Length: 156
Image 1 (cartoon, rainbow, N blue to C red):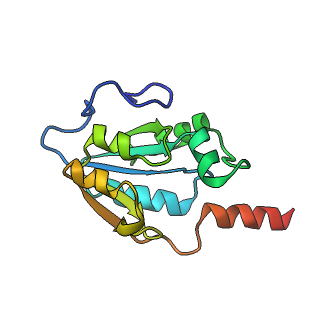
Image 2: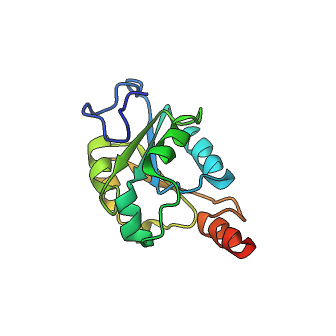
Image 3: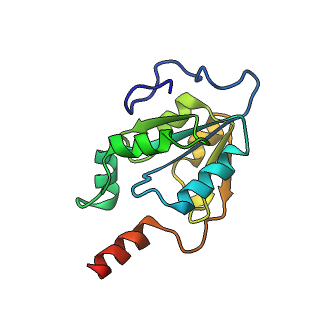
């Protein structure tokens, strides 16, 4: 992959994005990667020529989700995402939102799952400023990291 271990690349736009191609980006915690995540990533990648996944850092997740998260380290989450054939690159951001990385990346499309709406998405304005569009894809029913954690705790 064109990035080192979990930090934004120094060269933007990314060298793997086809000239004139459509760059797709998405972001999130991706703590406990599940089939719902994989479905979203595959469908996001089908919208363009390259997919960059922007991952919340461990510190960012702790601020957003509390001290018991993440369950899976930043390094491991990046490694698993990079192994997916539909993912062209992964970068990590330390802020609470991916707005800064979006402004540097300038994706043509920013994808989020259907549990979001553009009005409540703080990064939507950064996407528009960068000339991109926000696309909300439906989530796969029955899959959520919070649900997986709750089920695991109930079973133990």
